[in-house]
Structure formats: structure tokens, C-alpha cells
Length: 380
Ligand SMILES: [Zn+2]
Ligand SMILES: [Zn+2]
Image 1 (spheres, rainbow, N blue to C red):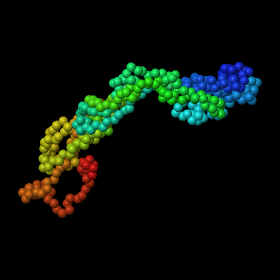
Image 2 (image 1 turned 90 degrees about the vertical axis):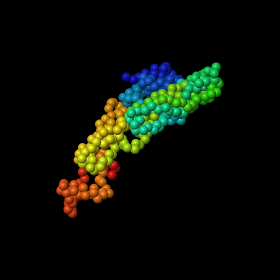
Image 3 (image 1 turned 135 degrees about the vertical axis):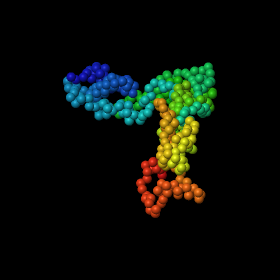
Image 4 (image 1 turned 45 degrees about the vertical axis):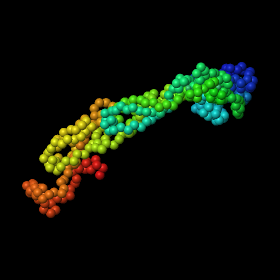
């Protein structure tokens, strides 16, 4: 069934070409997707384009009047091939009028805008990262102007409706194109699109609604942060212009290197060097951790490269409970510069253990697992 194109454009069946053109332009402005983006209106916009394509062409109009629908069967396949389905009309207007970036202006825009985010680097020791810390920060930022409370006007005055655009924030300009004349919206040059003007800007902030200042704040850094962690402090950034809401402040953690511990995730690694005899006989040694000294048992026969984990003495997990571990990598120190008596004792020991050295007895062999692990840890 053919559609009633005359009814779509709201014209009589005997309307002149001029009347049809005027009716189409009026509707196109009203139903322009930039003005009315809802799907129902866009559907209507397509329909009036279709109706116009038929009725503005005397041949097609005659065919339609005789009961034929040039679109029937072919589907709504286009208005000159460029404005219907899939091609946003606003792009078409931009292409014709070169108004890209301006057609989005609809109504006055608010003077209040959200403030910018800010980022501050904050250096922390390993133990501050592990257990959390409280810091006093001094930041240079923008705050609401105390004189005008963000309104931007001098005391006793208020923003006034713009006389040029009557508060709409935009003006429409008539442009000519091969489609005829079109009304194209432009931001109002008098008020900058705000719809209001400031008769007397605030002398302190020059109408911006905010002033720069230095402020100090106490921040709590949670346990478990590491190098590169960003902590978001919502609403602690710069106040926005025109009394707009503030942005966020981000703290970027820089973790200072520790002289003893190397951090891998939430685990800490350190190296413990013990004398050969202690490794052979076993010993108890005091090992430093972030929580203070710990007595660690070295079992008799400990080899170089062995690891001793101290569970739960690492860094606190940032999310969830618990902590990482402290992993001790043991290095056995072979004595050097033996005096005569020490050498004699060691030779006796070797004899007792059947380890006197006939030439070529010790063959180079594969490295032990632990020493390879230690070498990997030491980056060798
Ligand atoms: Zn002010
Ligand atoms: Zn204006």
C-alpha cells in the first residue's frame, strides 16, 4: 500500500511545488536528527525525505498521483542516495555547510564544568608501602572563588540573559545550498553559547568562578601499594570553572629501593651469608625483617643457594587480607686466607671424611638446583 506523501508533508494534493518545498523545509528543521535524536523522530525524518523526493519531482509526483509508488517494492532506498538509512543527516549538513563541530550546539551550555584531574607523585619507603602511611600533602590547585562563590559575577550583580540569542546560546543562520536554503545553528558569538552574559565579572577571579591557591591535606595511603600504584582521591582535584564540581586527585606511588629487601609482588627477598662451619653444623641466626629481627634456624648441612621462607613477613596484600612472605636466600661462605692451624684442621677433616684430593677426583658436574635458583635471583 502506497503511503500518503501529501499527508506526511502536511500539504494539500494540489499544493504547488513552492508550497511543498516550504513544508518540507519546515519539517526538516523540526525533525532534524540533531534537534530531535529520538528514534521515532528520526523515522519520521526519513519519511518526509522520502515524501519530498517523490513530490518535488514532477514526473514522480505524477506517477504517484496516478496510483503508483516509485518507492514501493524497492524499499526506502534513499533520497538521491545520500540522506536516508545509515547516513546521519548532520554529517550531510556538515559536508554541505562546513559546520562540523558546531551543529552539536543545542541550547545554552552551562558555565559550570567539571574541574581537571591532577596527579601527584609520592615517594614511599618499602615499609610504608607494606603497612600503609599517612602523609600531609601540599598541592597547588584551583578552589571556588570566595568573592563570588563560583558564579563569576561581581558582588551584587548576577548573570543576565543574552540579548543576542535571548538565552538560547545559539543563533540560526540562513545558508544556501543546492538543496535550497537551510537554517544552520551556530553558537551565539555574544555570550559564547552560555545564554547569559556577566555584566560585571568578579574582580577576584575575572569571571572564572575559581582562584588558584595552595592547600594542604592529609591523605591515608593503604597498605600494599607498590611502585606505579595510582590512588584515586575523588573530588580532591581542581574545582571546575563556573562553580563546577571538582576533578579527582591521583597519587602515583614511587617506591624507594630498599638496601636489603627486593620486592617481587608482595614477597620480599633477601640474601643471608653464613660461614661454612655454621652451614655444616647448623646454627640460629638473627635475620632482619620489616617487623624487626627474627631468629632463623639454619639446619645442619645447609647448602649455598637454599631458600628459607618466613611466611607472612612480606608486604600486606592491597586487596584482601594476609601478607606475602619473606624469602631468605642462603649463601655459604667458603673460608679464605686460612692460617696454618686452620688449614691443618681442615686437612684432618678431609682425611676423616675420605676427601683427600687425588688429582682429578672432582669432576665438573651439573650445578645444583638451588645454586641455579640463587644465580637466577642474583641476576647472573
Ligand atoms: Zn570570583
Ligand atoms: Zn547569546
